[in-house]
Image 1 (cartoon, rainbow, N blue to C red):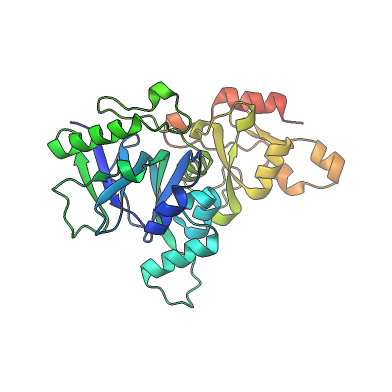
Image 2: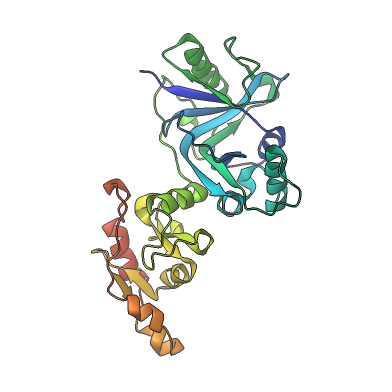
Amino acid sequence: MGVNLVVAVTDGDWFERLRTQPNLSEVNFWAPSAANFRALRPGEMFLFKLHAPRNVIVGGGIFAYANSLPCSLAWEAFRDANGAGSSKEMRARIARYRRADPNDRSDFEIGCRILTQPFFLQERDWISVPSSWSPNIVSFKTYNTSDADGLALWDAVNSRLERLRLFGMSEGEARFGEPHLIMPRLGQGAFRVLVTDVYQRRCVITHERTLPALEAAHIRPYGDGGGHEASNGLLLRRDIHSLFDAGYVTVTPDLRFEVSNRIREEFENGRHYYELHGSKIVPPTHAVHHPDPDALAWHNEHCFR
């Protein structure tokens, strides 16, 4: 079957900004429209190609996840890893590609292709595109390592990575070897986007669906040993997220929402939250994304007041 690789035409400003940033763990390769992206499985390789006439591959990353988001939320999730210096700069670039009316104040829905372990090659290491690349391609082309061009690309990337260590990888891991899926190491932005989607963009407690009001909460904080995995996340309305992190509310290992008496004692308030006490949350569809009972037990024991 082989492993797929995508070669995608890259915005020059995006590339130039990100290539100078050290220790990036993830990047958002966004598209100005919200078209679905299904060319890769998580763990396959996504490569960056400059615009013609520079027909060279200049970097890449491991594909982790794709979805569509309003550009303001994509900025919140990835910030500089969107390849722009500010949300205003990013939005202006999107508007230019979309040929939008300068007075259009829409929060444009964009396609997000989230890549982990990104790498940016020195000019001496840039890779010429395969002869099968057509100058008419304006978005991307998919190759497979079961074909000659795809295997040659995989080998060319490997040869460059011998001189380049990826952030978060040991020296021995900085070469991928024979074609295979590579486990994406999710960062904070990818975590936020994944948790948002697996909970169907709805707060697990209140069922609120106003996306800007929702946040992905770590059950066990990253700084306390929690990972950026969906099983360590809950999608919560912003106020409940704040209370969860502060220990005034929790979710028990049997998936019930509990509210501490401390809200009433300390603030003489909280009626809305007490009305939700004892409610059962609905986990994501796929079991692999269900909240980790051990993480929930940790939050109950170490955070809940």
